[in-house]
Every structure is written in structure tokens, then in C-alpha cells.
Amino acid sequence: MQTLFYLSCMCHYDNYAANESWKEEWALRNPTTNELVKWRGKVLAYDHRNLEFREWWIQRALDMAAHDEIDGIFIDSICKAVHPAFCPPDHEEAYIATANELRDRLPEGKLLIGNALRAHMGGDCNMKHLKYLDGSYLEGWQKSNETIATTVKIMSAAAKQGRMIMLVSELEKFMDEEAKEAVDALTTADERYDAVEKYVDFNLGIHLLAVEKYGYFCTRYGMPDANPAKLPVLDPTRFAKVMQKLGKPMGDYVQKTDYIFEREFEYLKLRVNIKVKGATLTAKEGKEEL
Image (cartoon, rainbow, N blue to C red; front, side, top):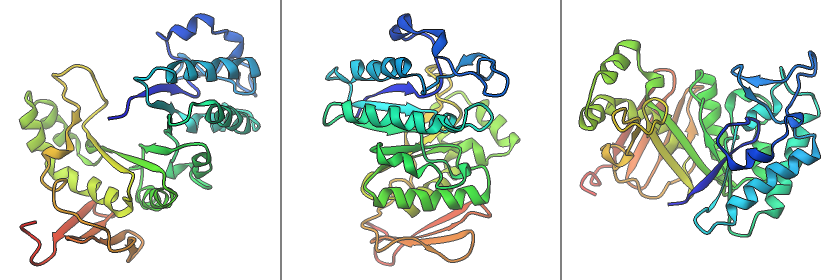
């Protein structure tokens, strides 16, 4: 297990000791209205063009990384650093300069992971940020058939660069309201595992199409919450398909049509149909017992 310190690159959240030395003059202002930018109407945004702020942001990460118990830094909200409605054109370049300086000053052996890759961002889908990152967490990839297909491609490309990739499987994204209400009404973990299991296959299939050595898969239902009664974060090893024998990949994925992908592993064959949100993991003949 690796423990990462959460650090948003654009959202000024409360309850950090470092906030005692925060200056509101470092907050980002809308380039059109000159008003303070506030995410969701309440959270101030950072302006990475300010060198004094940049040093404050980097130092709080370095102070945490100095602890033996902290294995690295997780940078969230990277897509917000280039938000066209709030950020001036030169802000992305300024943020990348901040991130590169953090990378250069981070102690050797400490990880730098980001919430970076986004299929719906257009262009290179934020692949440029992998130059300073050890890997990326992926969320919000279920927006459309096109974003799902693109996510497979960018995950594969990043993984082939030796980057860590963690696909977040938000099972509720492919459930109708009736199914969600049924799951929300359940009160035990066992009941919830049984109710959501059939939704795991497709998410797992997307992960396996692109998985390489440093690929990680997370299952959850709803937003993470410390309340044990909500049980939102699910142990993927509880699902039979996750534990099915895989073996080495026999090659890269093959795109058969716009939305049908296949990949073969040592012990099974995988077929994913993005259009119908379905995946079939078939054990090879004679390998079922392995």
C-alpha cells in the first residue's frame, strides 16, 4: 500500500495547517470580469502565475513528502488549470512550470500521481502532463461512447510509457434510477456486493483492454464516504470476474469496429462492446480450472 498526500492544484480547500499562511491575493480572478473564481460558487481557485503562491504550494507538498509515512503526492483537479471559462490563456503554462518544479524538488523515490487524463478534454487528452507525473487516476470517462473508446486508447498509450494507471469504476454510472434506488435501500455490505456485481464486468473489461504492468482497478458505488453505513468503496476481490485467472497478455487490444474491442490473455479472451456497455470474459478451453 502507498499513502499519498492529497493536493489540489486549483481548489483552495479548508482544514490544512498550511492555510494559516495563505494570502487571498494569490487567488485566481476571472480574466473577463476580474471577480474571484470560485468552484461550485464557494471554493477559491489558485493562480499559478503568482511566484509567491507557487512556492507556498510546492513547499506544502515537500513538507508532507518529508514524512516517511507519506509515499508521494496526489495532484487533483489538473483539468481545472486549463478551464477556458475561468483561466487566462497563459495559465496552463504557469501550472506546468509549478508542477515541473515540484517534480524536480521532490525527494527521490517519492511518487507524483495526478488526476490528469481526461478523454473529453480534446487535443492530447492531457497526455502532456505525464511528462512530470508517474501516473494518472482516471474518472469521468463514462460521458459517452466516444469518451469511453478514447479512454481505452489513452490508458494504453500511458501504460506503454511505464506510467501507473488507475481506472475508477463508478458502478452507478451505468445503472438506471430504479437500480440505484434499490441499492441505496440495502443496509449490508453483502447485499450491496450481490446487487452491483453484474455492473462490474463492463468496467473491468475497459480496464483490461489497456492494462499493463502498473495498471490498477478500483470499484465504488457513489462518492467515497467515511460513514461505514454507506459502504461506497467496494473490495474488487469480492467479485468473481475480477478474480478470474488472467495470465499474460498475448498482445495489445484489437479494435474490431468503432465500439467493439477485443484482447487475448494467456487464460482468457476478452470482448468489450461499448455501445451496449457489455463485456465478455471467456476462459480458454482447458483453462477453466486455473
